[in-house]
Amino acid sequence: MTANVSLQPGDPVWAADLRDGTFQNPVLYADYSDPDVIRVGEDFYMVSSSFSHMPGSPILHSKDLVNWTIVNHVIASLDLPGYDRPQHGKGYGRQAFVTMRANTGCSSARRTKASS
Image (tube, rainbow, N blue to C red):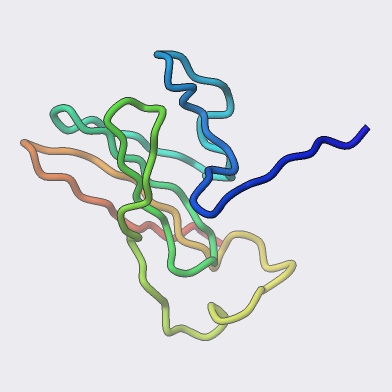
């Protein structure tokens, strides 16, 4: 049996928010590795590791922990040898991992390098 689904431009492919006060899992239908979420006032921010993918380490924003929007990236690009192509078999030594902390209303994200 084949479902007859017709998506229109602008239609969400996946929506966790059911628009009736409930939601369905997964909230984020994507792979956001090593997520780090903070709350600043009424807003939530999440940062994720992107390994060697650029732009790197997406920053997402939400008001309700269900509806998320990418607002920026921590790393625009890295002009270093090896970051412009996959390095299979090299482990995690060439990737970026990010943590985020809030301090007195100012948020910051910090890139850390994994040991090789």
